[in-house]
Amino acid sequence: MTPHSTPISELSPHFCAPLPIGLREHAQTMPWSAFTATYSPSGGPVRLGAWECDDVSRLGPQPRRFRATLAVGDRIETATAHASGPVAALTAMLYERGIGVEMTHFHQLPSGVHTATFVQGSDGQRREWAMGWSEDPTQSALRAVIACANRLLAD
Image (tube, rainbow, N blue to C red):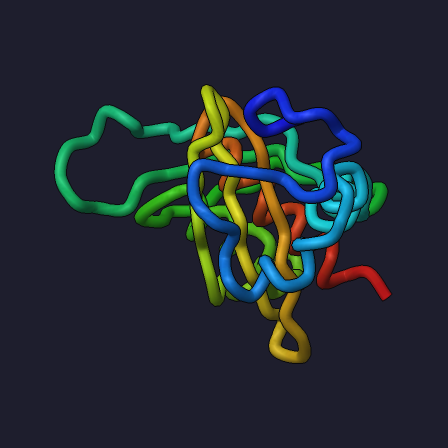
């Protein structure tokens, strides 16, 4: 995961637009490896497996049915939610499992063929920034939400 094929030893990541203001001040001097380890952790109690929209062919502005394989700790199950979009569906699925993540900021930035998604989420007590990275903008957003949930659950 390197934006614009930037070496991992670079002092700060570069995207096609500046990082969100609230994140920029913290990330400005971080090496890329520390940035990704902090804001896009690969581990944590919440993990997302399969993801799909069951009724993608429905027309009009109406809720869609989303299905995911979610793992919380040692428990793995299929979750479903009706929502206007994937981020709303995933946050609803997490909430049903006792993990509250309210999105307070959402930014997507292109980086070559990839998309970086930066979210700030709150559990009602504190706020955390997180990042998701993927060639697919939806997967990037979902990864950011999962990373945010894991950061909020960390001590």
